[in-house]
Length: 219
Image (cartoon, rainbow, N blue to C red):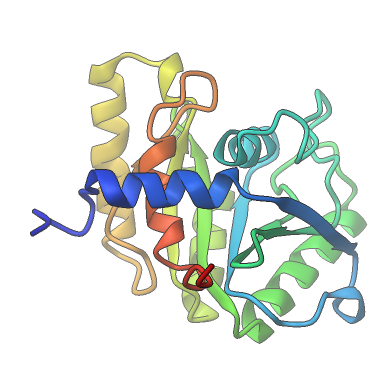
């Protein structure tokens, strides 16, 4: 028997590894609601400030270096990008927010698209809100948390780049983050601590997401 919801046994870790080692195919990119792919699989969406490491996390989870584009220019992704993972789970990379050099028109358009996606996507199982562990929760992150609460979307915090700070600092960030998410009705209670560079937390996050996917078809 598992000790708690956030402890994974070897079988669950292996199930997550196998899922994310499977084929991951680009489905399409949508800049408006009419371009969204049809609902067919459970969906996991990735959101966060520009340069938080969204693309790097998607690449680390799938074991691919170039599945999701990474860029030295924050805010480059301006569309919702969809991937099908082994025909069991759909991954959605949302536009980064909080990039100061983006135009007000672009920011308004991205926010509107994200809001409408959250409200109307019944297949969305979980939103992963990425927070840079070196910076903690910012005002735009809090706004996104409220948006997800208002949209009745289950969301969880994923701390990124945990290899860049000391354990004592990480614990302080975790404590502050736990206090914040306890105030939100739609927040998942566990905080995922990850590093795309070292692989820390990746296996556990894979196992968790695998539990939200369609069962593996009999072969």
